Length: 191
Image (cartoon, rainbow, N blue to C red; front, side, top):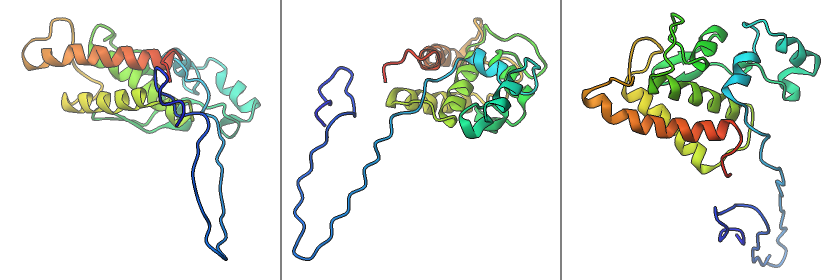
């Protein structure tokens, strides 16, 4: 991989392979020259591109060919597991993306809800075929593991600013994952 030395390393460019077909052998090559998927979308995008908030984006998506043409709505990509919470409905997804508990209470100062919002957006982006890289895959895996470890269900308090005890050790790693996933979701993560 001639692009391995770039900072950050890339997996693009020319590849060289030596091969020698034997007498009578038929050599067949398949080249998959697809570019990575499109840009990821923000949590704000996913909060609006659905059928349950009534913003009109569902009609725009349908007019342009819907999911088959790359115009995805949240419902097209559910269910998604976020911690221990299996998000299956549009309304549940919008509350997670809004950093609210499932009763509608604002939890934006709780790192678990911040992580859940960015993680859900990242999972939706990846399911829609957005570009990806090792950093976002690692953040997705680690974010899911952290939310699973604290038994995140989309209700209650988890990693708020006044958290104490064993959960306090999870607040800063959660916020670091929030940052990585946010940078990915806004399309600024170096892929």
